[in-house]
Image 1 (tube, helix red, strand yellow):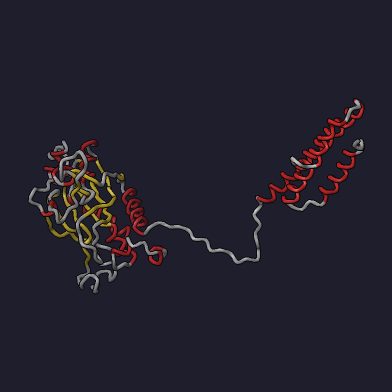
Image 2: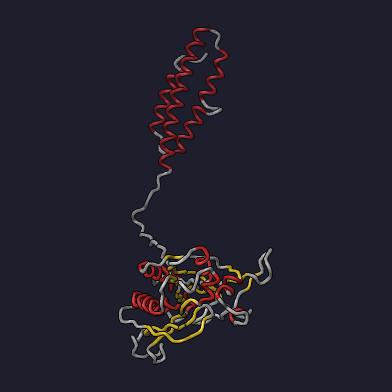
Length: 343
C-alpha cells in the first residue's frame, strides 16, 4: 500500500530540484523525471487502481491532483524563463568592431539628379518614355528621312517582337521620341526634360558605349526664339561647371531641328586657356541643339505659324567625365567598387 504522504515527499523533492536548475536542459530533465510518460507521477497513477478503501482513494486522488498542478505550473514557468534567455544575443564586448559598409548612389545617378534639379529650377518638368520604341516615334515623327545613316542596321539595334512587324521596333537611339509623345497629348506651353538610357551600335572604347544616358530638353510656346535656347543652355552649364563657363554654337544638321547647332563650352580643365584635353582650342563639344523643325510640330498637331520651340540633347556620361575627371566611360559600367566608392 502506498504511503499517503507520498505526494508531500514528491513536492519537497521537486522544490529542492528546482533550486538546482541552471539551464533549459535541467528543466527538460525535471519534466521527464516527474511528468514524463515513465515519470514518477505516471508510476503513482498506476497504483491508484490497487486502492480499495474509498477514503484512501479520495486522499490519494486529492494528493495526485495537487502535486500534478504544482509540478506542471513550476516546470512551465522554468521553461518560459530559460526559453527567453536562449533568445538573448550575448555580445562579447572585447571583440573589435566590424566596419559597416553603406551603399551610395552611382556617379551617373548623382549627375542626373543634379541636372534634373537645375532644370526643375528653371521650370522644366521631367518626362519619361519606353526604351523599346517604334520606328514611327524614333525616326518618322522626328523628320528622319529613310536614307539617314541612323536608320542603318550598323547604327541601330532593331527588335523583332512577337506579334509585331519585323524591324518595326528599335532600342531608342535618343530620348527625343518622348518629346513627340508629350506633344501629342499636351498642347503648348510645353517645357520638359527627358533623362534616360539610349542605345547605339558603338564599339566600346574610352569615349563610346552601346548603352549611354542622355537628357533631352524641349520648350514649345508662342514667341520662343533661338536666343531663349542660348540663354537656357548657358545658364545650365554655368550652374553645373561654374560661373566662368561660356558657350558657343556652331552650325550643324539634325533632321528634327532647323536651324541646328552643336554646343561647345569652355574647357573645364584649362578654363579656356588651351590644354591637351581640348586640343589647345579652349572649347569642348557637348551636344546638339536647334529650333524644332516645323514639320515635327505639324506632325503632332501644333501649328508652326503660331508656336515655335527649341530642343537640345546632352550626354550624362560626358558631363560626369568632365565634372569628376574620369577619362574612360567604361569605368561607369564595370561595377568596380574601388572606382564607385570614390563618389
